[in-house]
Image 1 (tube, rainbow, N blue to C red):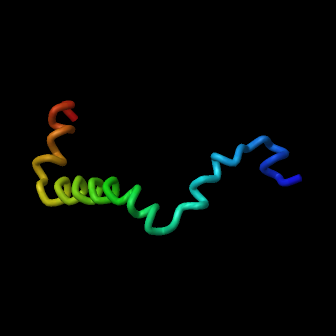
Image 2 (cartoon, one colour):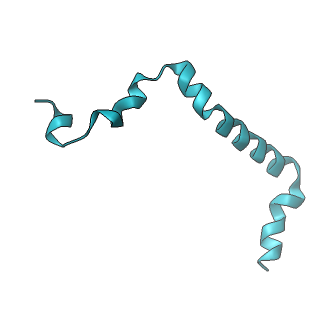
Length: 58
């Protein structure tokens, strides 16, 4: 009896193991590019990064 059966983990929870590297990149790629874009904007336009503390009066 495998450990996953003993602790009642179902097979559908392990579907990520069956993904290829290309499939993973395809799924998370848009999120990574969005995060890099947001970081770039916050880094190179300082007015945006200091806007929130100014609004919160800190």
